[in-house]
Image 1 (cartoon, rainbow, N blue to C red):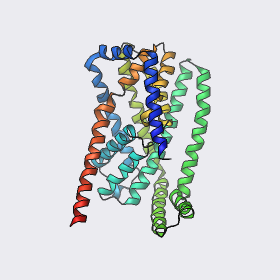
Image 2 (cartoon, rainbow, N blue to C red):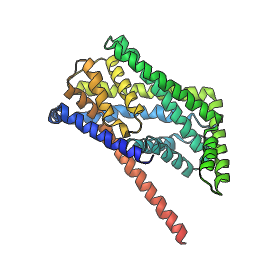
Image 3 (spheres, rainbow, N blue to C red):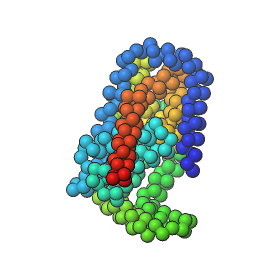
Image 4 (cartoon, helix red, strand yellow):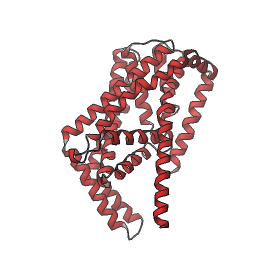
Length: 328
């Protein structure tokens, strides 16, 4: 199981490299260079999307235990960086988020429950976002057969999301700890059962506040829609202007396909393949489609790489403190 994320990373990078070589790597690079330094504006256009996403996560806490916006935003940044740049199956970043909250005096139960339900919120937003893209695909009369195939896939994803919510309400962590006890004999299971029950109770508490949960989904959906501006501007700067409706269709479906391929970090290769397929429906050349996809990845260098380095710095400081305490 530990090898799967690494295999996903290798497969994604090979797919990305293969697509670039197949469609003309030099042509794609030339398109990006011809646009100049103005492409560095794309991350600035994308950045405000982080504000509703952060507030969405904060809504999953009770008002008296809600982290500050600054703390939540910082944890979201580092968690996103880990998920995007490391082979962690889009889960390692959630652990980082929970770990930071615990360092800032949130209880482990609250922190773990919040990131678990936030992952459910993300799944529901993927569904909403994807269905929006399919609807626009039909509205633009681009490829109804492709829309029908995609709709079938989203039907399966809807069942999975429903099952995830039901499993969480049934006590996901406690069930997992009981299963683990049967497979691995240890004296530590009693303490693990107590912790698992505590997390499950916090998860149920979050779901009991339905208004806050729905508001969290709404906020994160708004943030996803806002990202359309990045794609629209990238197309404009690369010499292929499109309408906002077309940009919304492109962004929603490419992001959804990338998110569904969670074993491949940041959807490497998957996003590019989706752009090749969907941008062609709008009349773009393969070189233009790949250039747009790579242009939207500039934010990974601007935001995610510094976030990953910051996380390593924090973990290094914590390790030094822990070693000093053990030495004393």
